Image (cartoon, rainbow, N blue to C red; front, side, top):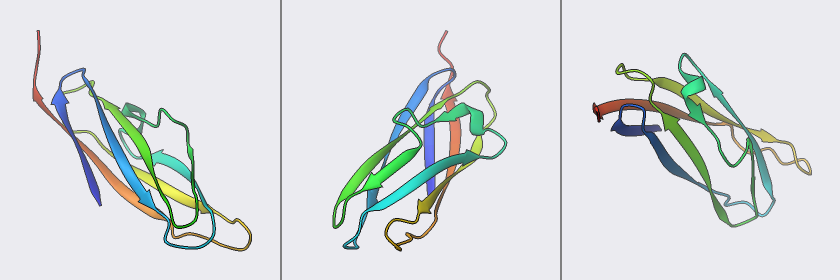
Length: 103
């Protein structure tokens, strides 16, 4: 899955990721940003996500462009073992594009 962040140079673009838990057990994920431009992306609500059974939640990812070149990183969501239940590790490709420059 690829999440694209498009905006002006030095602007902050915010995206919401919707995560669903189809199981009957609570899932807890630790989020890690890795890659060349990982420092340009952030998780303002924290690096831990808890999803209640049969529910969904959203996770906020922010990107602030510093350069004209496209930025790339990977968001890894690694499941914590809760009561013997492990969720699948989720990966999202994060890519940016600067569309314009404001004076």
